[in-house]
Each structure stands twice: as C-alpha cells, then as structure tokens.
Image (cartoon, rainbow over all chains, first blue to last red; front, side):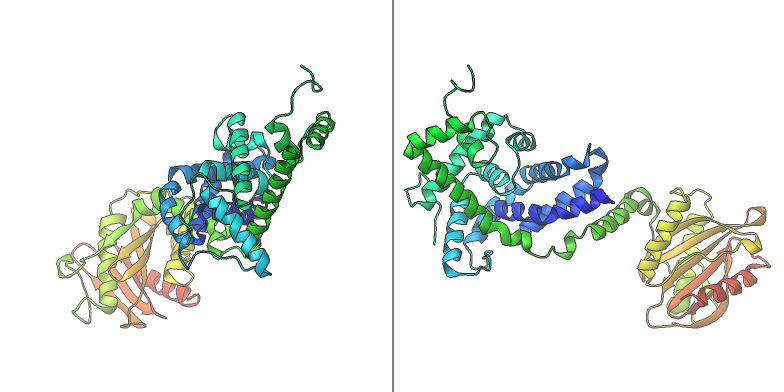
Length: 167
Length: 259
C-alpha cells in the first residue's frame, strides 16, 4: 500500500512535467493516465520503492517518445490558440515573466526541454536523467548547456536562431 | 590530473547551479566565477531561468488531481480490464436474435418481450453454454468474487449467486451475458446425478418489472421465469425436474430479500 501512496504523491509532479512538455492540459493528463496505468501494470518489476520516482518518469518518457510525439504539432498549435492553458497568477508582472519563460521553453527542441525540466524543475540527478532518457550523461550535460543558454538568451531578449511564430 | 588542476567546465557550472558540486571543486568554481564576470553572469542567468521555470509550472503541481488519475479508480479499471481478456471476454455470450426460431415460448404473451424474452435468452444461453459441459474460464474463488462484483455493477444491484447447497446444487460457473436487452448474468449449478441448471438474470425494460412465476417448457428443456423489482429471472434445466419449481421458489425468496 505504501508504494501506491508514493505513486500517488508523484502524480502532481508527473502532471507538471507532462504539461510543461506538451503544453496542453488534456494531452498532458492523457499521458499521465497512460503512465499510471503502465506503472500499475509493471509495479512488480520495480526494484525498490526509492526508485519509484525516476522509474515513473522513465515510463512517461517512453510513452512520450513512442506515442505522444505525434501529437506535438497539435499541442503546439494549441499553445497559440486562445484556449491554451494560461496559469492563474497573482500579479500581472509575474504573469508576463512566466509566459516569457514558457514561450522560451516552447522554442527548445523536445530533447532539450526534457532535460532542463527534469533537472531544474523536477530535481533529478544527471545520471538519473541519462538513465531515464537512455542517453549518455555527456549528452545530458550538453543538452542542459544548450537549453540553459538558449533560455537565457530568450529571457534577456537576444535574437534566437530559430524562433517560432509568436502572435 | 587532480581536482586542483582540472579546468572549470560547463559541467562544473551546472553542478554549481544544481547544488551538486563536489566540495573539493567548490573553491575553484567560486574563484573562477569571481575572476570571470561573464561566467558569473551566465551562472546567475541559469539560476534565474531555473527559478522562473519552477515558478511558472508550480501551479500545475498544485492543481487538484483530476478524478480520472485517481489511483483507486485506475486500479479498479485495471481489474475489470484484466477480467475481460482472460475470463469475461472468453465467456461473453451474445444472446442476440433469440426469437421464434429458438422453439421456446413462455406461457402467456406470445411476443418475445417482457419475461418471455428473458425465458428465451435463458434457454439460449443454457443450451449454448451450460449444457455443453465445458467452461471457457476457470471459476475459482477469486473469479467468483470478481464476477459477482462485476455483475452487481452491471445489473445495478447485489447479484450474489443464491446458495442452493441445501438442495444439493453447487455453483460451478458464472458468466456475463450480452443480450440485445442489455447486460445479463448467468450462474450455473451442478446437482445430484449430474443435473445442471442455469440461473439467468437481467434488468427488465419497462414491461414486466414484476411478474409472477410461470413454467417454461420446450423440446429439450424445462424451467421457470419470473421478475421481481425490475430484475427478470429464469431457472432452466435440461430435463424436466420435480425439484425445479421448489428451487425457483427458493431463489425467488432469496433474491427478493436482497434486491
């Protein structure tokens, strides 16, 4: 029962990661739901409860790669539509700053977006991220450099090499 | 090369930002940042970017988790799904197009509606399934509990199989049945001398929500049909049996107390 409780505790952050990646609430919760269903099926193969969190994110990553990438175009369209998710924020200033960083995030290739979210938001270790994504740790580090530098450029208003259409 | 000699790389700067820098490297990185303002600016910007990302996404993790992601609910759905391929799906019988051709009539209305349709469906599933001898799915204690729970949900009331052991009949199988009148359930009992009987039940549609017990008769079967509180029942045996009427009465009072 305690594994299930730990699983439950991770749902909010799985939703946060899925939403940050897909930028569409419905698609994000679909991904989380698929991930939870999969996790419940495979729970027996989990080696230790301490590994649950990276294990969950790895499951979600695999689902994302296998199936959800196809919805990427749709998700990005949705970001620019009036129905796109706009967080309810305390102040107008905070709101514009946050929209900025999320717009910047949207300009990153998914591989870079994943790495910076997993490290900077979800707090995973580099080695955990490497295992999760199935890439060498050096790749994680170089993606992290590019993601961080590019977001810095975006936030500081430097020209972007490839900028997505912004309304 | 020792820690002291290794040049400062991006990896060190990331480790600094993420708070995972080795204690031995820390003074070197501090010194490097002090001596290189552009590196210090980069690191500060990375920290700011991380803080903004955390702040901009925090609301999502604070949102109430939608019901469809409820673990208990997902577990239940999973149990129901596991059932389907392994047992229920193998056991689903589609009792469609049970009509005049089945050679069955309940005494009373001649159209296959109300309890008359229950009688026909019961006869069809008994002939197709119970009388055949072989069951598609194992029916152990766990399967029994799961099927009862599933049937109860589908029928909208407790569908626990009646205990007929007093008459020497024991439960050997249960089955969900898809009919053109909606979901139905059947329980199969074996009794003395290899007699097999089928109890069939399904919710009634508009007509015959309550109907008195009537005998059914046919070329190769005998049985009784009735309805109580919106649930139609039929008890069918392959051969006419003296005790069938008594069993039907027992089931009617047993189920009547529960539904």
